[in-house]
Length: 353
Ligand SMILES: [Zn+2]
Image 1 (cartoon, rainbow, N blue to C red):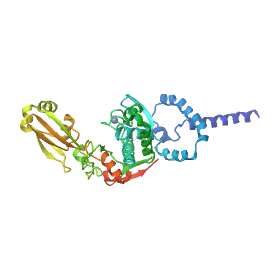
Image 2 (image 1 turned 120 degrees about the vertical axis):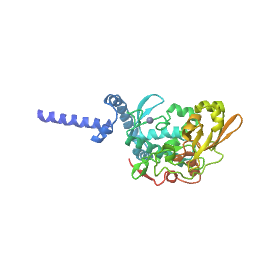
Image 3 (image 1 turned 60 degrees about the horizontal axis):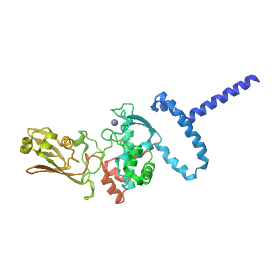
Image 4 (image 1 turned 30 degrees about the vertical axis):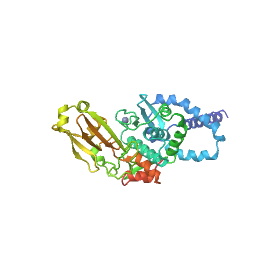
């Protein structure tokens, strides 16, 4: 009799432990354990939060309407964890893919853009994160899958940055971005069943650029395509003026060299400048762009007595999806799949949980 009571208690204890283990979201398989990229001390800190969430769920679930359940179903796909290095706060954060994608949307695309353009951006953002996870994460912050430096990995807006950017309209924008993420949950861009290298830019100026000319790497899905842009859009055309002294300083040459020899030395097939001549040297247009802070390498230059005038078309490196072009396609009835398949040649949009 006494022995039976002991084994019942033991069974109950084991069951309770298993239940708690499960509720905490502890890893279930060996692979889960490998994927769980947080150290033990962090996991310990997370426990009270998770317990709190479980209790909150117990209280909230019976009161939830049936519609919310369907919403939870679509959210299921973006529940995997992403380790994000928040460059703004100099710290590592773990978040769900859903949360990550929404933060990228807020940082990388104007929230007033058409919903289908935002959905295309959501799929692109998710694909970038998946690609990073498969390729060793962020090279500057090895413990992170991705960092929030838009010049290195991909931009991500913190709540206070969103508030600053959106002001009073914040809630409406927030829910649009959530919708864009939820309606594409789990979807990513594949080429030969692998996540593609995602590149995008603000405005193409009318035609996108081949990856090879900008990044010296040819990729079959990152080739130059037509991109219809609004000629009156704010990023379509831009004039930047430099004095000779200012330009010479930024380009590390003399005013005389600039006056005498500065010229466009070659073009890419898309019509952008590939190289410029300064004195005896030819420098890549991408380097010129960086040094002068030009909006793009698609420019003409007029040299008058006092100044160099750069007339630029488009904004950004020009490779992959043009965000303003995506917005224009969406406005004329294209859905996010058509947008992505226009800008990324020969890709498929696939789904995985
Ligand atoms: Zn990075």
